[in-house]
Image (cartoon, rainbow over all chains, first blue to last red; front, side):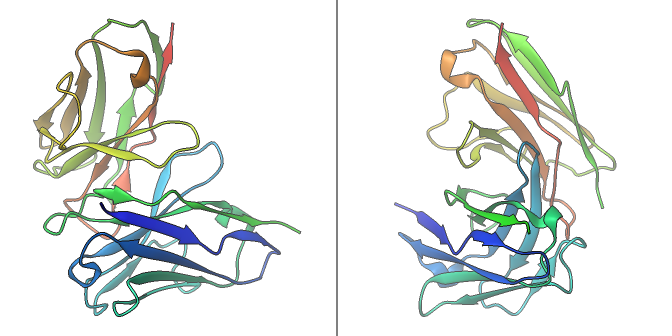
Length: 119
Length: 108
């Protein structure tokens, strides 16, 4: 069974940093592209970042480019999101999501971790 | 970026009703469209991909259609567990992957 478990969320002040982790199990992590998707309170879904299976290709949403860094450790079956220069508008539940191996829809999702940016 | 627009944003229906949600892309996306269901406090769940292919385990009362710019999600006979928010997502052109704003389906 595919499992994705996010951690690392919490309360942080504006301008601060936070690192999210996503622990994967139940599949060959190194074979799949991964993404971060977020959802602000009461709002819709917003794609944040993508990383290819090898880590060689990375994309970011314009809203986080230059502030967030996605990475992965295939030996540890883990995905990360380093978030710097956090703003109030970054407050959201952050989900890690796996594609299906062929096409880029999000077949599996974690339960999410809440990031709150507030003073 | 491709803009995805869903309609309606919310509506009320009754158990047993047939309901249709529409998703329109700002440019053609072939059939590279997915539908998700999200219940309060839960992660989204994939329902349909490639515009009309039902994800394994999803009840057959859900169906999707369309190609190009216009797509629909239909629930043929609403059950109580179907009251949720539904999102479409294009994966034709990226980055960015883009979602519709969501359609909240409420009990009448």
